[in-house]
Length: 418
Image 1: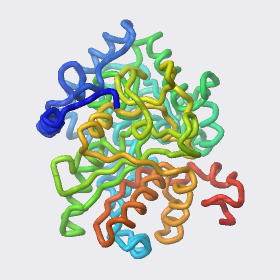
Image 2: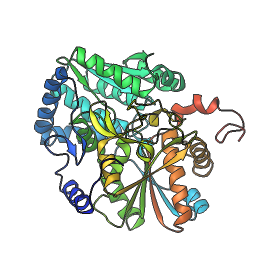
Image 3: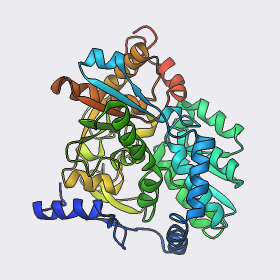
Image 4: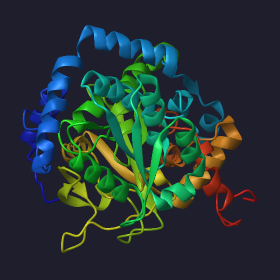
């Protein structure tokens, strides 16, 4: 990696992170993060920071957020003992069930918090982007709940492969804009959402869906998603009588993973593992494994790890999972890799599809294709660590992936005849 950090610096950065001192005032997680935004957006980002400072820890805001999470979202989500997978893998397997949250994924935690914040900031409209459609559905639902209209940008490729979620967004009152430019997936959707925001920063609030983007978004999204890890830690102590040996989550932009990991960062006995999309193979353009294969650079307003070529051009990516099909990653994940607190590895399309099929057959749970990557990585870890406790972030349910699964060639893992 081009950004070198000494052993002493790694220790210091982890201690600062645990003390709540990162990101710093400039939005940096060590060498990563920052705010690389057009001048026209700086006032909007400053207003957002002021709103965070004023409301995020305000008792009235926290009470409303908590009440909505419990009464509307359905938190806390369950911790399920996966007996079938555990018996098959030779491990103790626990699933943190974000698929049971309202709208079917972890995305609602962040969307709700930001929608409530946008209303307090006087926004007249909300702009959002989505890849797998889960953030789009969550934003549409949260904005309906908060009484703020929203426009959601989605790549044309993703609209085709995530049709059920597009229909849900329409039913929830959102305007969905198909993005035909660029790679027509999540990166292009973010680009178009930024263009919209630049054109109308005073009336609009950009509800960013993952722990990426210019400061203060990576911090804000992490704070809103940290409920996952807090709940999971309490539930493991209650149900399993101890902490997990490893906590595993899929990583695209990285919001569900950072939310899960933050509950265990201070626990040295708990290994943390993020699973990226290995796609079709190791070639540039065949996967979305940013941390495994990327280099530092700037994308969508922050300095982090990216997939780009020798000329610095950000490359198109591939994953069977729309939600992981992104060439960047949140800056806090880049830091956690650099200091060695989290290990990041990959699962291929075929491995994820096989894991999805196994979870369906053994647990009666249809996971999202994103979550299936975490299952595949966890199974691999279990083979090397028999009998250990494994906590897996099941980030969402797989209903949205039915068009993809139904259209698979009949000889592939996860297809109807496999």
